[in-house]
Image (cartoon, rainbow, N blue to C red; front, side, top):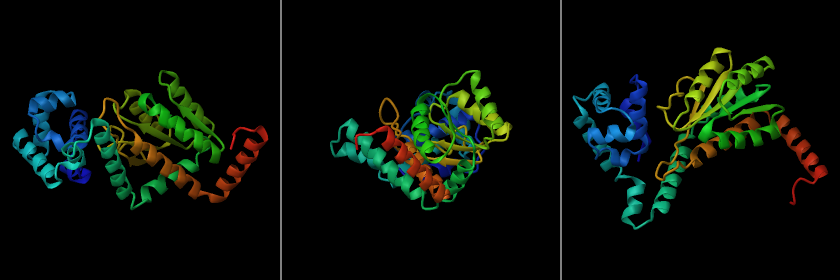
Length: 281
């Protein structure tokens, strides 16, 4: 499914948090959402039926039926998407989900034809001493993964993967130590603490780079730079190949922001690893 065709439906429209939940559901279930009733869409998006009607009205329709027709037209134009094609060919659920994820990576690659946002984010993060990396709940493994490699090229990376009252303390301590930026990885179901941490970091003067899954994520628009990579929602638990790939692209851009420093630090790490016999190869 063409993500741009779906997100264009609400481009420029100021959505409420509830309407953002509906928009997010549509963005990841566009091929089938046009065949749901208003009540079914409300149930799956976790909102009330009147909220669905108000969402349709906010997009310029007289009611939900007009929006549903538009969703069906988009789905028909896209031949109902790769996932349904796989089902017609007899693919099992795992194959269909992974092929949809592969198609999502191709769309992500297409969206990176212009690397302006990635390069801007890289410069912001590379200049921060220390660099703060936030990832709570489902985003915690990706935050740890990013931080592991970032430490090979940056002198001080502080990872926050636990919430609670100490989260604010960690942000303030990092800022006091000289931090100027934070990478905030915020994935569905968008922990409230993550959204609040983005606001808190911005309030104390940190430039926040948001890595999230959708233009209607609750942190998109609240960050100095927003990078978007869709997650796969075809299995019980989300597939995160897109955010992981984009995080690695961002690491490459950080390397490219100061290639001399990157080379020096990587060589120093390799010498240390050899001395300590860290690896078998």
